[in-house]
Image (cartoon, rainbow, N blue to C red; front, side, top):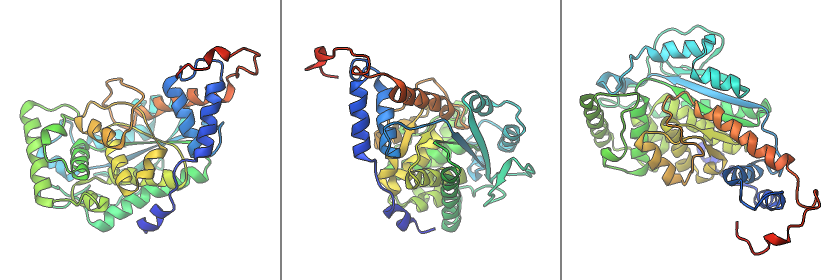
Length: 358
């Protein structure tokens, strides 16, 4: 996988289509700007697809599962086998959070094993295991080699290609992996060159005060030892990242390359999004952020990319659960621009709007 060649082929939004969508929004039977984020989403969608009116009927959500060696340092509250247990649960249709939300919002769910500890023999889970025992403990060693980090990015990129070839209109990205709020925080701190752990590290799935202090100590020590290069996303991933984060970064890069809108979720998802952005800032133009995560590192990454999440629901489950919810809102945004009447169509005088600022 030659990242430089991929980066050179990523092109930003179609400005003509975006402006045409903005003009149409201003002609619809409503005060200009009165539908807020729904309007901005439809304009972004036009820039992505090159069409003022686009469909978002066919939707897919990828969940990448991976275990993390840093778990051994007591940075997570849940048992490590939960990664395996939950992934098998998603596949079996036992109605976990992501199953319910994808089903309700008519989103196809795809499951990917990037490196989950323990056997998973289920044809509904795509086997892309690059490290069968999960990543290395980055408190003591590198999380993975550069070669494996690149392969993990390539896996995500290939799934974006699959979504493109199968005609999906909208892509979502999620994950499962005990300890991955630590990898996410470490990646975000490395990418943004943040040294103050107090600004970036949260309690994840719920930690005692003692365990929380240990988590901050472990991440601080690991970053000081490895000194990841903020300008090299492969270096960051190989030293303090996770296979799930690497795959999602590849998915975001692929979404931009294949010009498909992609929904970001919480802190793990946005860590991957930030790495994709560091790879090529144009990838951000294809991202639609879903909800605000409670994790402090999330806000740091979102602010750095100037992404403004549409929802604030106090969610912190993971799995990409914000994505199918946000997809419903994207659908509403497209319903407005695709179906709403213009002033001209209903023969309504709109002279009163001249001089009014949106």
